[in-house]
Length: 275
Image 1 (cartoon, rainbow, N blue to C red):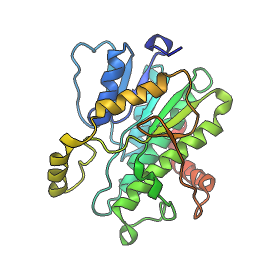
Image 2: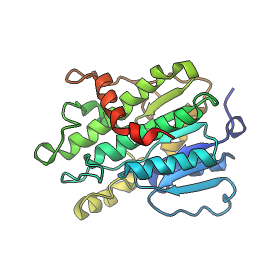
Image 3: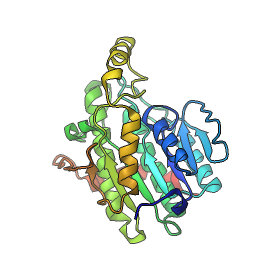
Image 4: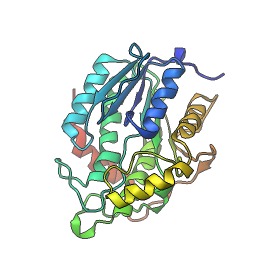
């Protein structure tokens, strides 16, 4: 039997003000759900004022991210979390105000922080489901220089691929680590589709993307697949699905212990997690 919005109270969508995130927001609102979105832009959805709430936040600021997520947890019950926010890596090395490479923090580290806060707040009282948006390029990730990345060894494709591999691996670890509280998590590789993820790219890249976008898969179709997987009778825990709802393998990491890496990442965000 499929779940309906009467079976849960809140859906949180990161990056919900444009592209795929906005289509996910619209889809769940149309199905009667209460939806909370985070994003950098303003967003008005006439007719849904009673079931939609936007929190503006910049994921390149860990303190702002933590404060916003804690406020969300205080004001809303959450059952489903969609880790969707993300950027294509800037063409040149760009540090955040917290001192980390921009893609690493926005795509991965801030979602790791957000997820841990939500699990601490609701994990013992609600059945949580997480969907992690990864990418087909997660297969190119290696992770051997993520925490030591700087201008001298920066490569945009490598930084983006590593961030998407980290998300897939994080999902698998969450499913294993929190199985005792019934947490469910899967990743979705949406393939190539049109979105606004190119916002930090140069004008020529944006021009080419604008030309190609009409020939790409629509974000609404990706949102529909996500919903079908999430609301189905059963889905596998901790795996990566492609757009055809087939399970895809996650790259094996030889150059780094992922458990050790996550411990280091946890030490980074622990000061922001405590309520």
